[in-house]
Length: 237
Image (tube, rainbow, N blue to C red; front, side, top):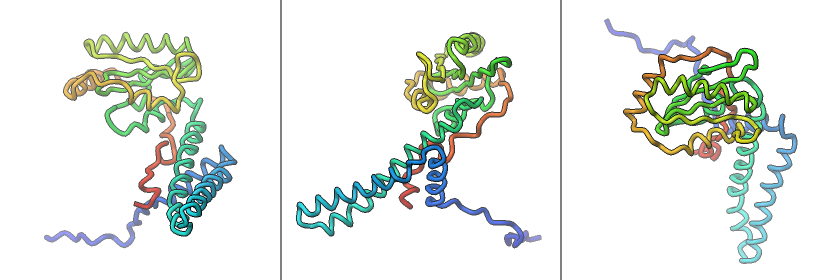
């Protein structure tokens, strides 16, 4: 019997988010934490247009250069909005339990992170998250130093007993000495140098899966547009 593949008229269609909707959401979110963003964007846009006009007058082709400067003015404004939106997004989740995992979630490839913390201090709510990639194992702790250092060291020893010599990197998230600021965390992890093959990464992942984690509610991610917006989408490509 032939199967009817005709779409059900009652099934709601998934509405695709357009690039300009993403820009508007980013602008609204940023404005809540950075009220001056409107004037900053206008200043950047008008400044680039004015610069283009001056150059156009100097080369005696003001209309051509002025029209050419408009897309550059838009790109300049979008770049500033993206940077400000990133800062505002991190500001919103900073200090929340699981903020480190939300920041690590912006790393799109090369790393696998446990959604649940692998270690937690129930009294202080200090957390440790674990990631595995070509550079080895990274343990990311959120909490004040040196308190989080003890929790990280305890988890390092537990992890080392399982992975048989694979590199382990400890990172403390925070504003103290020797700690990495939340918004700089993804870059700090991505800068680690590869030391394992893909096969070795898979083996380490397999061994660490048995260790599990601690289930706690954590922020779902740095929003909107995952802290580093799709700038091609912003240009409508």
